[in-house]
Length: 269
Image (tube, rainbow, N blue to C red; front, side, top):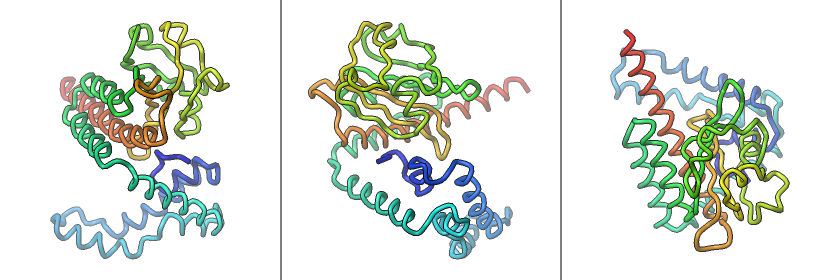
């Protein structure tokens, strides 16, 4: 189950039912209804909300568009909706204290637009959220498809800075390609595990949890934690909490990068 995919289209894509191109096409069709119904830029906020509420009644659901395009069947749609309902139940079963902690941390990492500060806070709190010995944030290089180690934590973390993982290599590469989380109890027994990182750091990875990071609909990298401190391995609750946290972290990164881009442009004008 792809915990990090909150939207119907993301579920269908991650399960291989529809392609990314088909999803984008359906979303563009849906967006067209919003654009047609909310086109007046001169409206004040209250008028805009009222018009949006009225216009939204005519906007078809994403599942309806995919059905009409013939990309999915009714049975496929019902199956994925059942998965979504299951995820809602899982969220309700989470400890309220743990969920509150993740939400509070989300506010903290989104309180700054300094990119280095954002990345450092993400790494600090990723360990706290999951009680992990070490964590690593790998950002996607859009030009090469490689994953680039950002600010790793743990023993000998400096050895990993700016190290690049080729597309599809290791657990992180698999998560990036499939955009689904991976929870591994014994890394040595998983064929996706890449030994090279342990060789660089002289740290033995026993258990690990790796989740995709996405801001809005854009995939930006993966967040990985290794070796839970007080338990032999990570749990499904850890996976759900880290997935929620990674979404908040991705938004913080995108906001910081946007602010940095604006500041750089301003300095050059």
